[in-house]
Amino acid sequence: MGFSLDLRYQICLQPIDLPVFNPVALELLQLLSDPTVEIDRVTEIILKDQALAIQVLRMANSSAYVGRTRSETIKDAVNRLGSKQITSLAMAASQAALHTSDLSIVNAVMRDLWLHSHACALGCRSLAVSSGHRELADQAYLAGLLHDIGKLYLLKAMERIWLAREIELDLDLETLLDVFSDMHVEQGVRIMNHWDIPPLYCAVAAHHHAETFDASDTLLAIVRLVNFNSMQYNLNLYPRLVQPSDANSEILALQVDENALVVLEADMQAACA
Image (cartoon, rainbow, N blue to C red; front, side, top):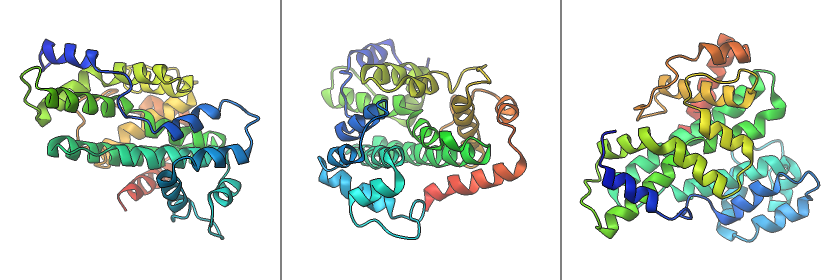
């Protein structure tokens, strides 16, 4: 651990409700556990936040999602894409808005973290399809998007600590990366459990850096492989915690070939467009 025990203590004291989830997007995500949810209810929830609704509609009509026809309203988009994909878009749109700070060093890392998370979301969706698990595509997108949510929480927490001036703190890149490596997994699981995020996403957050994994957990294998490859594609700018050391087990579990990896890289690089 390359940072002080005082900083660890202060981080653990920070409120669990620091802004890492948009309430509307969170409500949608929690609603997905109800298989009987109606499209009108999904539309109603999105429209609670007009700014989010605009971003969702914009993303729904982007090159990554648009079909032969464009959606003119949120209801059109929900009808075209379905509740699961619209929830993915709402979470992505809200996460993009939350990755900002008035502190230059924190803002820079947040921007890079968003690029990594968005690239992983696109990559996980792509890999789910190319590896024959299309039914997991929407879940894979969200799992990729949220696997590093602990880092966003830690950035918000350290920003708050620095502004409070209660301890002496050099808020530099080395300190941020040391805290990430040591705490982002445990804090990610902590806040997901607190906000009642569905267990499959909590499991991904908990085990995406584990030395070994259950090869029958396809969703976890997808996220681990995409996260590992993000370093190869220069879409993870701070790979302080490099674990596992290779992705051979994940490739074997998913039976991924070279063509799928070529498609994966192209789809992940789309996050930079």
